Every structure is written in C-alpha cells, then in structure tokens.
Image 1 (cartoon, rainbow, N blue to C red):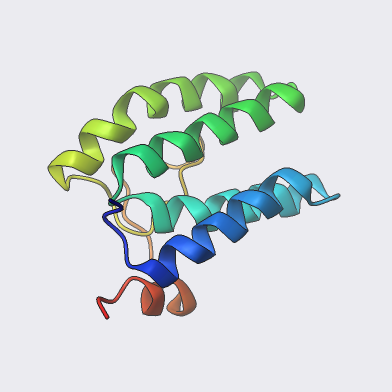
Image 2: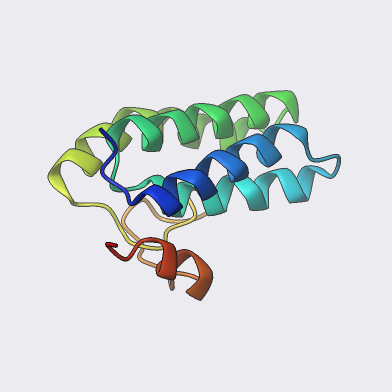
Length: 114
C-alpha cells in the first residue's frame, strides 16, 4: 500500500510517464522532479523515481547527475521509511540531499489526506 494519497499517486504515475515520453529533455527533468516531490513519503516510489532520474542522466551523458543519483538511490528508501526527507526537494544532484524546498501549491494540495 502506498504512503501517499490516491490523487498524489495518480499524479505521480502521470509525471513518471511524462518523464519518459516528453520530447524536450528539460521537460523530462521537470516531470521527474514533480514526481520526486510526490514520491518522497513512499520508499518504493521514491527509489523508483531516482532510478528514472539515473537512467535519464545516463542517456544524456550527464556524469555528475548520474553519480548524484546513485547516492540518492541508496538513500531514498531509508529516508522515506524514517520520514527524514527534505520536503519539496526536487531530487536533482545540484540540490543538496537534505535541502528542503517550497512544495508547489498544486502538488501540496494532492498530498493532503482525503
């Protein structure tokens, strides 16, 4: 069972799909970042998101991003399980692992319990 509300899970699935299919690489990252914010409370979804980010970094030959994602893949599940993840963090390597960021209003609304 997911640790995120059903509407957030549906949006996560949409963002992950768009992260794989968007034509523009910048849009792919934007979709994966939104999915990351939604996935943080769930260990499986959070880890799956970082694997997708790692895959995109490899495809784009972004070594720094790929290495940063390896660290994040390892840390994702324990952070989610313990509830010690920085809310709003986009999950990219250029952002600190523990750096909280503002959660976009549309995503925050989806994370509220029903």
